[in-house]
Image (cartoon, rainbow, N blue to C red; front, side):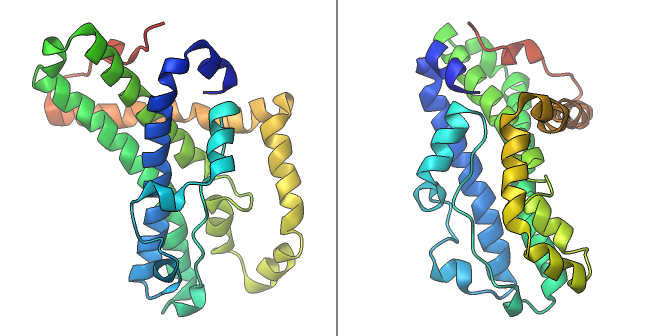
Amino acid sequence: MGLTELTAHPERLPFYLLVLMLAFAFHEFAHAYSADRFGDPTPRSMGRVTLNPRVHLDLLGTILILLVGFGWAKPVLINPNHFRRPRLMNLIVSVAGPLANLVLAALGMLGLYILQATGAFDSMSHGVLVAVSLFFTLHIMLNLVLFLFNLLPIPPLDGYRILESFLPLSLRIKLAGVTQWFVFVFLLFVFVPSLSSVTIGRLFALRWPIMAGIDQGLSVLFGFSFNWDLLVIPS
């Protein structure tokens, strides 16, 4: 995904936007809902306990993910002091966002299995088949990318909050004083090709074994292997 892709295939923009809205909305909703359930009133007071994408989307973050392949939604503000067990519950809230994207990717693959099992693909016209193939391809890939990307232990990503949950208080206080510098590290990893290829590039490559694992589980459940040629996006 990126500017070159959208320039070559502008007709795919609506599919990208639809998948992004779903992925970002479910990610942020998962954070807000879990924090709300654990007793923090902050997300609900800010109207974030909703699946409405308009509440969660950040304009700049959405534009960047379309142009350069990474971006963000509006972060959900939480106050762990409201949690009965702050460290454990903060960990669960942090994990909830990436986990939501993993679940969405798995549900997308489940949907493909159901479509193949019911013979729905055979009855589709070429145009509908192309649209369905494109949507599910983007849905699965983007959600797996967001799942992996948000696990990077760099603020303001969820991976850093997850890491914080395992660190002693003294170290967390020391890190809090230098977190602003992590933003520059983050930008280097994203925009310097030599660094990006050995960090984010290798991380994103993990989406293939994750997909293979989900596929293997679904093939056992359904009793057949999915025809992945259906996910090849036509030129």
